Image (cartoon, rainbow, N blue to C red; front, side, top):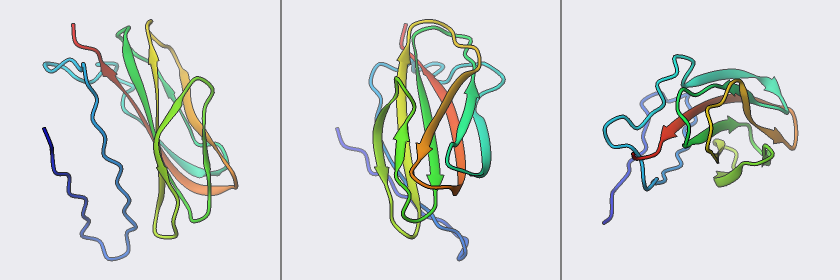
Length: 130
């Protein structure tokens, strides 16, 4: 099937970028890991956005989302793969993932940026179907 995704914002000063993707094999009853530290949210200015991610479940897909400034290129953390990234001068962003088979404690989820930038980073974990 096909789903339509609309991205919009109501703040004239905001820069909005969207990346939409689908994940097969997700636990439909409880798709997100229940660890109280999730989702992780961080913001700063540097070339190394990161969130420490802990999970209560094994067999999860760890996701990292980052937004950054114009002209910056993201490089995923070791063991992660990029789902999608874009860089323009309205908003830059990237999504990465890593599938793990055991629970995680303080797993660094992040990117290396090609230059120092203001950034916002979010990480979360999606649970596999039983």
